[in-house]
Length: 469
Ligand code: FAD
Image 1 (tube, rainbow, N blue to C red):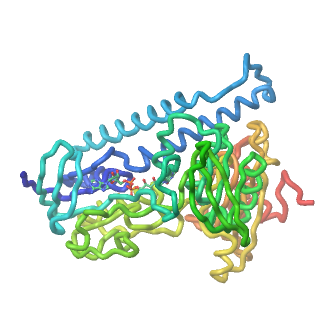
Image 2 (image 1 turned 180 degrees about the vertical axis):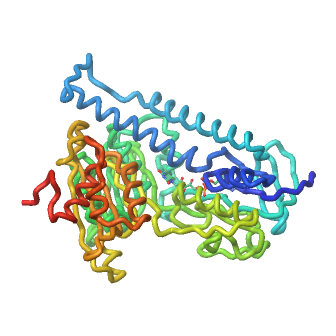
Image 3 (image 1 turned 135 degrees about the horizontal axis):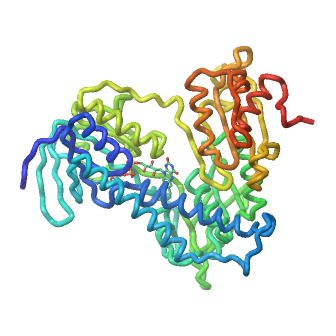
C-alpha cells in the first residue's frame, strides 16, 4: 500500500481521461491516470481509429475497382487481403496508443495499469495489473470510465457467430455475409465498411434509419446504400438469433405484422452503449446517476464536491471530441477554473461512404423552435473538384433564418463531409449570414465551394453552377 497526494486522480485513459491528464499538467497539476486496458480507450483501440482505418481500406478497394475509369491499367483483379487489412488497422492503433502514452509521460502524468474504484471522494483504491493494491489520495477525482456495448436482450445474442463492435474489429476472416442489427451511426459505419470490402450486408433497425442525421440526407443515404448492395430494413421487431445447421446465422424479425428472416455468416450487434461504472463505488460515495450514467452539470461536476466526470460515462453525445472537451474542462475546473461546456454546436459525423456530417439545427428542429427558416442546397454533382475525384454523390443543405439570413445549420453528405463541416461550425459560431459566406472567396477547385454555392443559392435565389429545373 502506498499513499501520495495528487491534484487530480483520473480513472480511465480514453479521450476524456487522457486529455484531462494533459490539460491538468499544463496547468501545473500533479496527475495520476489509471487505465485497466489500453491508453486511448474505446476511441483509439476499438472505436474511431480502427473503424476509420478499415474504412480507408474499403474506400481504396473501391477506388482501385474504378482504376480503368481513371485511365489506370492494373495487371490483375484487385482483391481484399483481409488479414493484411486488419494488420494495418492494428499497426495504426498501436502507433497512436504509443504516441499518446509517450505524450502523457512527457507531461509527467503518472500512469498506473490497473483498475480503480472510489474508496471515498478523495481516495482511490487501485488494483494494478501486476497484482499490487494501492490506496491513493487525490484532491480531485475524474471519472472517465467510458462505455461498452450494450446487451440488446435478444434471444440468442450471446451465441457463437454473434459479434459486437469490439469483436468485429478482431475478425480473422472477411465474412461472406453479415446481418447488422442497428441502423444508427455505429451500425451503419460498420455496415458501410464491410459492404465496401465485399461482404453481403443486411441491416435491421428497430426504429428509423440514421435517426441522428438530417432526415432528408438520411433518405438519400439509404437509397444510395441500397444501390450499393446493402439490404436495409427498419421499423421492425426483432425476435431472436439462431444458428442454422449449415453454420449460418439467422435473425428472425417481424415487420408490418409478418415474420421475416435475415441470414448471414455472422451477426453484428450495434444497438447502443452502456456506461462502465460496475464496481466503481459510485453509490457508496453518494454520486448521483441517471439511467446508470453519472450525472454532471455543465462544469463536469458530479453531485459530490471534488469528483468530476467526463465523456461517455456521463451519457451525453458519446463522441470522442465531446469526451475530450469535457475532460479538458473538468481538468481546468478541478484546478480552480470555471469553464462551462457549450453543447450547441457539436459536430456530428457518420463515417459511411459517402460521409454525412452536420452541425447546428436541422430543418425539423429549427421549425420546432419556432424559427422562420429556409433551406438552400447545392449538389456535389455540380462541383468541379467532386467530379475530378469521381465522387459526385451527395449535397450540402444549409438551414438559415429568413430575413436575417443567419446560418442555423449545415448538413453535408458527400466526399470529406467530416472535414468540410468545420466551415459550417465556424460560420454558425461567428453568427455569419448566407450572404457573408456567399461573398467569401473560396479556393477553386475545391469541395468547399459547394458550401459557398449553397450560401449563394440562398442569397441570389440560385447558385452560380447549378440551376434547379
Ligand atoms: P472510453 O474511450 O471508453 O475510455 C474509457 C476508458 O476507461 C477505457 O479505456 C476503459 O478501459 C477505462 N476504464 C473503465 N473502467 C475503469 C476502471 N474501473 N479502472 C481503470 N480504467 C477503467 N466517436 C467519434 O467522435 N468519432 C468516431 O468516428 C467514433 N467512432 C466510433 C466507432 C465505434 C465502433 C465505437 C464503439 C465508438 C465510436 N466513437 C466515435 C465513440 C468514441 O469512441 C467514444 O465517444 C469515446 O471513446 C469516449 O471516450 P471516453 O474517454 O469517455 O471513454
